[in-house]
Length: 568
Image 1: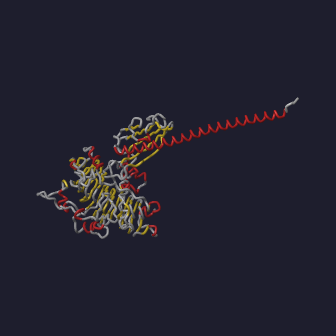
Image 2: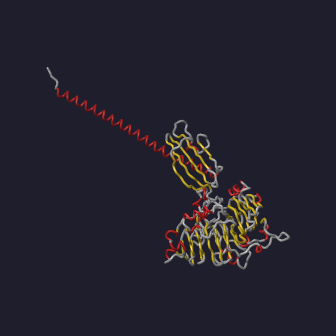
């Protein structure tokens, strides 16, 4: 008989056990890998959902900002929009799905909390993807005042301060070079899109700075070459300012004493420009106003003058005059209840400057936003105004203003002036539309652009006339013997001002493209800190003048809040 080997049976049992154990290990490993894979996939999907919810909420916020820009909320109100309700039309990106739960939706809340800052809104948006919710919030300013008003002197061109008796108390800026000669005093910062220089040589190449004051003692911190160019407000279209002015004609207007001369828009009439820019004012109806201490010119809110404005004397109130033609400054313009500029706020400590702003919130503050040019003095004075402002070699208006060969940088007398460049419409040329009106302009023409003729005066309401109704000579209402201007003055054309008094003072801001300010002996510029953008987000220190805007909106703050899906 045959007896089986006990050893072989043991070997077979051991092999079977090994196979079983190995199989269990493989199953456990496979299960672990599967669980790990599922968890990794779930985590990855969660991260994707988390990111997607953020971008959808951000997209909803952008939509909300555009909605607020198109139709600002009523002061003190809150507007609510939701994809679920069909009031947040963001298309397929945030449309609710057909039951698969991938995307629940988004909502946006636009709040305007009232007060004087009616163009400041808080936008909150949320979006949900699967279980992930993201909530964002931003504070924005609609049509914010252009940053050009952050400077006492701003040139959308080649800035120049030539004169040892010029003193600036505040910051100044040029959208190209800023040239200094003869050591003026600069108590503030200097910004230039290209070079800060003396005689077209960078200031660093001189042993000492070509200016004194705070900037001269600390040029490392206060002098900034290569600063970005600032977008200028375009006053080609007045439609937004007209709508603001006409929204409340009892609050927006101009008075002489207690007599309201303008209710919103002069004569409450405006017509489309024949050039096709709807909302533009045809420069026909102008206005003449002269204020006295007992019967001052009062400006409140936004006021629109279709044509030329001739103004002089005492001014009071808070607001902005939008001028469709030229601003003719016939003599001194002084505030009836202005702040105390004797200690320039920008030369004080930040705390003292802020206190000055707070103390001056109710004082007079009037701005002039001019589509044409700012012309100060008697423009018909052929013995003084004409030779200094129009005929002066190089800088007189007879020699500036041409757009035909400015080159791509838009600045005359730079290397690209005669080099053609590609325009948005596909054409090539050297001309640059500096003022954005679509018309290639030549140098200023005295008779067409400047001179106050009897014909021009006949379109100006209130302009003085003879007993026969004929406009009097401009020399009877205007003078070069002026020396004080208080206000915020803006144009993207010429500021040609003859100030014949021994000492001349600007309290406020002067912004232009071509500048020909001719003073007699001394010129002091004192910045009015109340219009600086540092105060635009503080409702306690913000005077909403409705100043011209360059960019449609600015983001003051942006943050993510804890997830809030209650509005979904």
